[in-house]
Length: 251
Image (cartoon, rainbow, N blue to C red):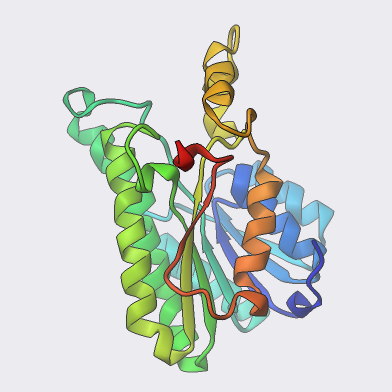
């Protein structure tokens, strides 16, 4: 997908080193945007920097560490001067653990990354967007934010929270030039879901069979949706949770 409007824009992406986040980064970079990645995995970030020298830069850190987030904001503003689009993509799974199988450490880890991380990054970058009266925020929800069965207790709770947070975020700031939406992926083949493909791959086959489209999606498909949602063509889409799930929610 080609969008000339991204030329000269700056996109901040968490979880940019792999999976959906990396695919989002590549999609924006190929459309002429400057991209700043934030992740714990330097190898994936170095790969992007090598592929798009001068266009891509990064900062290592955790979205759940406020100081890391603030440092990354300082770095991107120093380098690119502005942030036009924020993609809160970083997230972790919980191994489909039921609540009785979820100890406090697992609960906190999932909530700190998926929910508090989104809050930290948003609250760090949002004042800059409000000051400029312009900004697009795309959060990463999940079908687990809309129905049960897409994750365990902690993951499902965190993604339901992202849905509510996104709606409130847009309602509170849309009159100040901010537009916030979320994407709700279903079965996407990423490093985060590699366990489903291990061994005989029976889990991956089961998921594909249960998906009306009959297959898993690739990260670039979510990235293509991101390009549209962040574009001026989607300017009247506000506070929406956009599924990309091969029909899973139609069942």
